[in-house]
Image 1: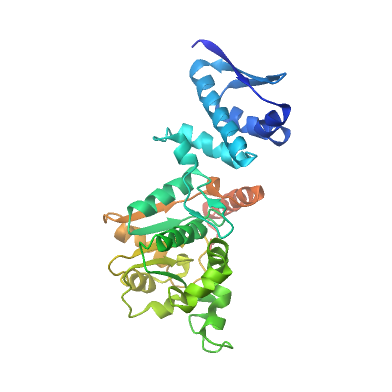
Image 2: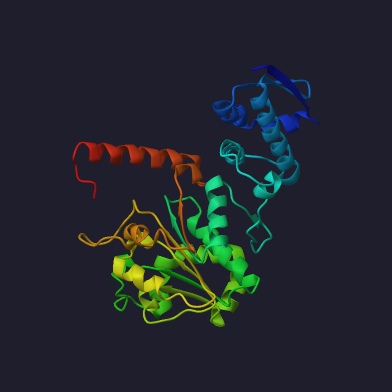
Length: 328
């Protein structure tokens, strides 16, 4: 194939530094996928390589420049998102994909998907009434679900937001703990509070909580109810039993949407109890209106070391399985 050369005119050295990233880390990510030489001369970037790959890299760098002009910077995570979109040949308007704002936080910050997995998750929630989100910590499963819930609430698509979580450490028997019901469950529901506080703001959150428009409760308190016109999130669902999972899913009423999140590698149930999240895919995978989303380490949006930690644990657990050791 013909070798092609393209020149990108940069406005300043500062723009080059932002595009290249710390110690050229952004260019290194691009070079892992595409065999294109990126050379800087004066205020120009020269791209050299196979014609089709040069065109793709040109488009990626052009999108990076747009991001820098809009947001002031572009990080390695955003570069990887762009690379994934091109590798997967994701259809649609690229600018729209990269700027798919789910909701605004209390201070006006736009919440957007940061990985291709997160984008597919959001599309899944928009399409289905029940979505199971399965994957490791740090992939945004809970935070994005809360953002979608707040967005639906603000648009009056639902009347209430209900967040629930199994209080496994207390065995769902919370009576021995001091304080009222809210005091008892606070430690288990803190991640949900944090997400709501960030997105809604403390005052708005408290106002809606007092009106009963936001409800946060342990899973045991869902029994016997039918929940209409609500956005319901079940967090840490790997710690539900199969009976609890069935109970939760059959609470769904008219006009409601449910998101179930969990990490099947982090089950804290007592020995002998099987996770309802592990079982549910076998039962519900072919039902229309129910979606399943699987995250992996590529979707982790926490500290860069978290991806390496997850990989190390996967390797260790895989080794234990291969030599016949217990994997509990």
